[in-house]
Amino acid sequence: MAEYSTIELLSRIAEIADAGYSLVDITELEGDEECPVRLSFEVEYDDEFIDYECVDSIDSDSYTVYTPTTNDKIIAFSLTELANLSDFVAAALEHYKALEKEPSISRNKKDEIKRVAIDARNMQAKIKKTIKCYK
Image (cartoon, rainbow, N blue to C red):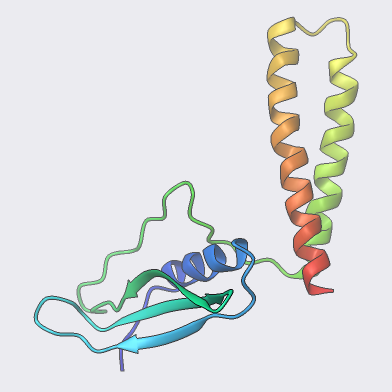
């Protein structure tokens, strides 16, 4: 039986879900001298198949922890936790809005707040979309 990094698996599944697919075909491919046993991920779209990068099995005796990149999606939340996060982001956005009106804050700081607020609004929309998909 092959073993796989949970973080790497979660990252691949999250990548597929983030692309809007709710179903994925996962196949375990046999290894050989050049490649270890690995999982293949494939989704169907308009009667065509899209392949995602495989996840290689690991040798637990020599395994080093998978180090995710900054773009890897690696965290799983419950719907309740996502709803809480959405509320936290909404509160942060209200705070940013109040800060932007504060006369004692510098122009540079206000510009930084605007950039952060844009990211927060995008995150809030993504959280709400995710919650809506699963309710």
